[in-house]
Length: 300
Image 1 (tube, rainbow, N blue to C red):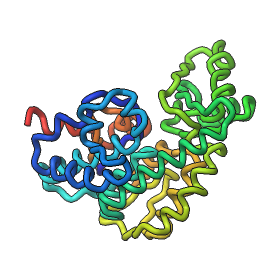
Image 2 (cartoon, helix red, strand yellow):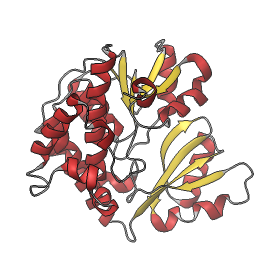
Image 3 (cartoon, rainbow, N blue to C red):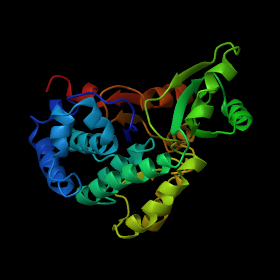
């Protein structure tokens, strides 16, 4: 089972450790060609390898997507195993769908680039901009109560005791104050501009709808465990799901439960550290072994 992280943290030089693998370099070359008309001739690989943090933030989603595509190429070539299924957290769904052959790398580059533009446009409509915070120590009901009280939205349910809140930055900044007296609760600001997976992101879905209609979606080669906690295999349903996810919460806790029910044995995180793997372990304990790309490649 392959799992793909969301936008998360960005690092200067990201993906450069993979460029010595021929299969990764092929991905970078193809992505550069596909992205050139969108980036006014710039190479997305150069932004990943040598760009400033400002550059990376401007093209964060595309950079993360391309690096995950390169990592997938290395992983599948080296391991030579057919994955049982794929999943991704938020942006990570696009990496998962690419790995499963739902759309081409060229079309994926277009989708992810336009996705960031659409979300930036939605964010620009929020007075003061949007924001997000991670919260640990609250269950889903607790998160919903905070969201209701502060008029914000629950953006993710990651485990039974952790998730994400999203909304206007002015309201999001009230979350730590609101929860400061609750023992065992920790609030972590996320370095993501905008209010992803919330009602304030509706404009992004409107912008992306005609763009997605122009992209060919195929049936996944592997089971696609979607962020709504269900397995989706029909191309038109996948397209509809991606549009819904602009406003709906990521339910990764439910994905972990569904993977356990499907008898998934190993969850391989296509990233440099274990984030989703921790969500899986905290939800289903040792029913599923978790590992990262680094665990597999070692010093190769």
